[in-house]
Figure 1 (cartoon, rainbow, N blue to C red):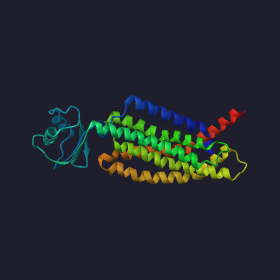
Figure 2 (cartoon, rainbow, N blue to C red):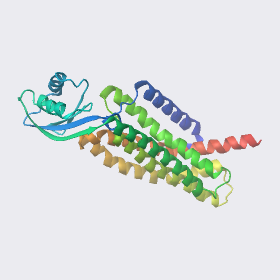
Figure 3 (cartoon, rainbow, N blue to C red):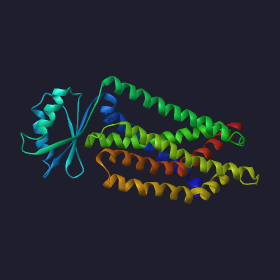
Figure 4 (cartoon, rainbow, N blue to C red):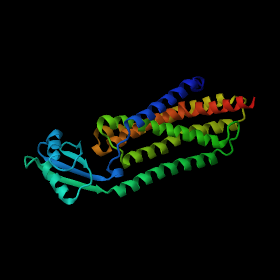
Length: 299
């Protein structure tokens, strides 16, 4: 019951986190990767000693490529992201990475994405997230259609969406901060992480709301706030254990996985952490707040 007792504190904390994350997002911005703006991605490995990234930057500056991003991968490789390159520029880049033959470099992969493809991926990403949110509202409204006392079923759906936005806005704000200081870029894995957060987080919220529904059906004399508090307490251990199990898998992926999946693992971990927080400390207090607001409006 302490969650409901101190609901104003938990609601205020969530609102503050959302505001700060929105400020970070609009202040620092999100850098689109080649998946969305188009460009080229080259992965190379070196035989023996890998040269320092600063040496590669100096070598690339001799080419007419303008801006590039160099990321280490594994013990002997680099991933280089640039604007879209033609075949001549591609060959010149690989040659420049050998630093005039001082290092033996092997090209592992080369991917080129045109601006039109990037625009299409951006549109599909927005449509995918929008469709997922709409589907969640419809599903929860239908699943809780028999729960109309004292909060209408569609309000469960709206509250779920509000808390899900909480779960993706905060990681996005943190990623914007990371992007500003480390040059991290938004790619398709970032969008996949957000969609995964939505899927896993909505599961937690449905578990909590379903327990509230079952306890409301018993028809006891407890108030709505007491029922929500008891229901949340009954699911808290299960929800935390499931989320921690997933996070325990993601942490090694971030620490020891390939460079290309580090941001995915980081954003997913952050999103799951705030997702379990919102399921227990934001969604339930918000549900009670809505019920109390309704009651005051009827007086």
